[in-house]
Image 1: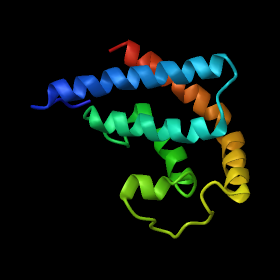
Image 2: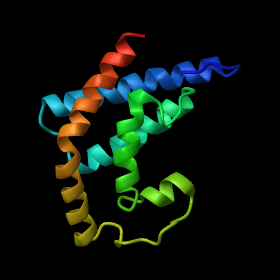
Image 3: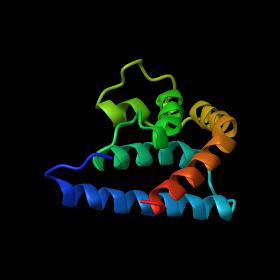
Length: 127
């Protein structure tokens, strides 16, 4: 990750990223991670990684970027990330259809997400 004149803010972001990763690992270990947590966890990881000076295309987070790009149409994704809904909402927020889509996406990405969280945690702890 690059550092700049905003080093203190970036260090706070790294600290927050470690906290998010630890929370996700705890949820994984306790088998309490929901599919919504998975999707929102990707967004948190990416936001904090970028805030800490990284790019969404950096090796340690590229998998999160892939998941986020495939889940931006649920849970307010495109609205949260860009301030507008780029490709028109496919689901009414909170609807049964959105819930079903979140569940399907979560099942599809579950194994890779858990592996990526573990790998990111190891990467952050080696820094």
